[in-house]
Length: 433
Image (cartoon, rainbow, N blue to C red):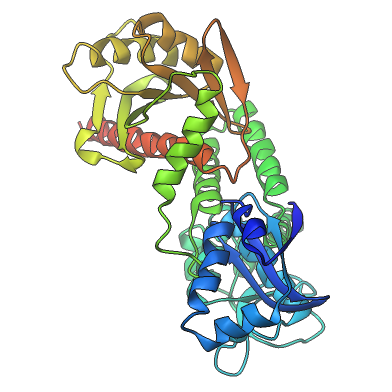
């Protein structure tokens, strides 16, 4: 997170970044207005345009002498930082945060034996932890919803003898109602520790420390894999991937400029990244991304998703069922897919992305003999790009708020979703036989 101060002249405003972050209109040391934005430049400049017609916007501009802004690597973090700063400073012009008679907060009853998580109006019982204020009921529910899928928690006000409904769908697990009725004290204490650990992770996420949350989750995933608890591992992996997608790509309601063409800018940002290694690159009109999906080499499938001019082009999506019975690895599957793909008379891509790192890129490179097509991979833990540059492979890790990088991640996630959907279809068919 980077803090920078700018005056309100045209030259300073022109230097604003097209990045996610939080901005503060200030007069001296007084903070007049705090907002968040997907694009700081687009959002801040929109205040100046709105000031021509709106008296409140005009007051913000006329009474400010400089702008301070912070860069964040996701919109989730921007929302958390924005709410923290508003709670701390109560800016004069943030009137939109008043909902009826009070603000919206997330309350965690940390002093309880089984801490609960609630959405509340402004209050302070001096026994709970509060996060907020937040811009809307919808935003708060979405924030808690995405966190709860990875770290289940209870929202019942009172403990009862029966497990709650949400325990049946994995959103309150372990459920405090079940824990208190367990007679085996050792088991009861173990489940209680798991529940309280979930609450600590919720708090960490709400403080904006997403990297620590993900790091701990990946450690747990490795433990499950080593124990060969594959079903649990797959379930946790899917939750982590969903959480990452929501955290880093989710758009929330407030302060988003609907007139800002992010797909166009994302393409330009990605082009800037690749031009360092491919100076003659002119277009990224068609991008294809590939992913392989299988469970212990059974029902192996692959997907090809296509983005045209930075947007999904579902009419061009293709799916493959691995044909060769001799194939024993994901690498060999990729080789088969690319040999089959380039026998087709489909449009030629400007860029090919494979889900994976150096081994996957090298496998595709064996069978891809078209020099005009750029090949890259996207490796995980952490996400990074592996570029098949002239004469060598190069690994780069752009900032998480880089729109070009997020475009690559979006393609990877879409390819994974499409491949997995086909894989599950084939697996379910086989199981019904």
